Structures are given as structure tokens and as C-alpha cells.
Length: 421
Image (tube, rainbow, N blue to C red; front, side, top):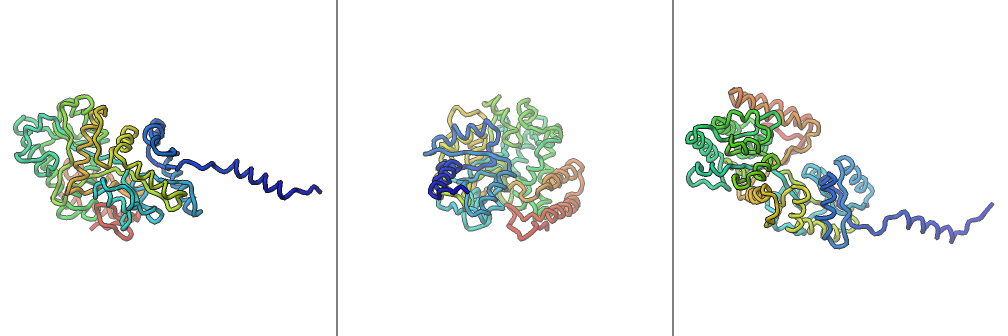
């Protein structure tokens, strides 16, 4: 029998381990965002290239992203330095995220910071970048604004008066709304008008305040271009001149501003009795409790929040900064127009972030249909508002209970399924 030299075996084992173990690695930025290859490359070459020592940026679909993170959390040690993900991805991880209260977050609006606390007293993630919906107007429409109205602090009553005046004085309805089959009308009701009147997306769905919101929209709709039922992207009727004032997602307004930059202005969504509700698509950066080097992780978080990095991220991903920045002149016209409008909306004293639905899983489509169907019945079908809301509230309650989804902002946190009063 051949005997093995213990010293030689130890030396060989050490050599094998040295070859198989990763070298002292760059911090790993593990993200669900910037997955398209061109965005991933831009993140590496344009956004993160300036971080001292470099960064390993890796983007993944949500499933693998969570699987790897959960494996590291279960083992008690990991390689992920910083997480990048949407608010809904980070929400269930609150207990495994490091407090970022000491990060450089002073320039981020309070409403967005509150979202990042995830219902706790700690800053569980730092808002990183955002997309949202805005209002847009042809400059010709500004001549018909109600006297004393501030475009950056408009109310729904003023928007209705504006639409009425345009229709009366130009002889045709000039307000437009994305009510087509692929239009994002449900987001307007979920995140904008209803919360502005009720302070809620779910709980107060059938309240007296919700009835008042639908009554107000019914009046606004009476001054809308009838072709709105076919509009999916509002940039097209804005370009054609069929519509002078419209609401839509920034991505669905961009062509109008890029093709005719001198003709349009962007401005925040209006406010109702409860505030200026808006639906941000928020991505955040967070540090898992298993990060290998907390100091480096915190430095990377702070780096992502610097104005220069935020501008580079905008170029790479088309997501807008969460801190106030001076946008360079070489940005597309749409970006230069939308940036200040988004900043005015998110930083408004009456700002009310209303999040995309959280925790619904495969029931998300049915949830959206509740709001779209309410529009069809109340606005197009002229059915009784309270009766429709009673019917739809029962369906909404069933969805929330089946998903067992707790409330999200602007509704107050709940234990178990978010209630529908």
C-alpha cells in the first residue's frame, strides 16, 4: 500500500483551494434591473466604471435573483455586496436588509425615503431610480389655463375647468386619455385619481370619496376627445394635434417631445382633496445582511446616489434620478422635459406615492381589470357609480383574500389581506 506524505497532501489541497476559490473580488452588484445586454454593458462601462476598485455588475431575472440571495442568507455568508431591485422585490426581504440610515440619502424626497423603510423604523433600501406617469400639454393649451392655476401644482378641479374651457373656446374637446385596449387607464385610477380623493388604492375603493372621484372623472371625460377610447399611446394624438392635454407613462409620451420639442410641456399629475397621488416605479439599492464587506457596500450605495452617477444611470436605463440633478444639454428633449416634472411631482409638499400592486402574484391581471371594468361601466356605460363600486369591491376583496396580500402605500399596512371596506 502506497503511503501519502501528509505535508505534501496539505500543500496540494491548499493549491487546489487557491485555484478554485475566487480572487479577492470586486463587490458584486446583483440586480433585477438593466437586464437587456445593452443596458448591462452601459451599467458596467458608463455607470460603475468610476467606482474605485471596480464593480461586478450582474443582472438577472427575478427568480434566479431571489434564489441566489436566499441561498446566501440561509448559509449565513455571501458574496452579494449590493442588491438592485424594484420596491416589490425588496418588500418581503425587509428583515434581511441592513439599515441604510447612515447612507448619503439627504437629497431624496421624503415620500420616496418612506417607501424605502418598508414599514419599519430603518432605511431598508435607498431609492435608486424611478419611472412614472406624467401630464403633457401642447403649448397652445396654456392660453386656456384657469386664472391663477400653477401648472406644477394643478388640482383636478382646475384640470376639469381647463378641459372645459378648451372645448368651449376652440370648438372641440382637447383633453385626451389612454382608454384604448392597450392603454394604461387602470394605472391612472389605481395610482392617481382615486388615491388623490380617498388616500387609498384598495381599502377605500367603494367609499363616498371614491364616488366623488368618479363623478369628477365623469365630468372630465365629458370634455375628452371621443377617440380616447382607441388611444393606447398618447404621444400619437399629441403629435397629430387631435389632443392638447394628456396623461400617460413617460415612455408613451416621449416621441411627442423628441419629435416636436418646442411644442410640448410636461407637468405633474394634479392633486385631489387628499393629496397629489402618483405611481412611481421605484427601484432601490439595498445591502443584504450577508454582504462580505459592509464598508465597501455602503460606499457603493453612496456612489449610486451621486448626481453624476444618477445621470449616467438615466442614460443607461431610461430610469430617472431620485435626487435633484442638472440634466446635460445633450439629453433627448423628452428627458430634459420629464426630469423637472418628475422632480416637481415627487418633491411636492402634497406628494402621495401610490405603489404598483405588491404581493398579488398571478392575480395581478385580475386586480387591474377591477379598475378597467369600473371605468367601462361608470364612464362608458353610464351606470350608477355607487352600485358599480359595490359590485367591484366584492370582486376586489376576493382577489386580496385569495392572494393574502397585505396593503401597500398609500393604504396603511395591514396584518394579512388588505381589507376592502
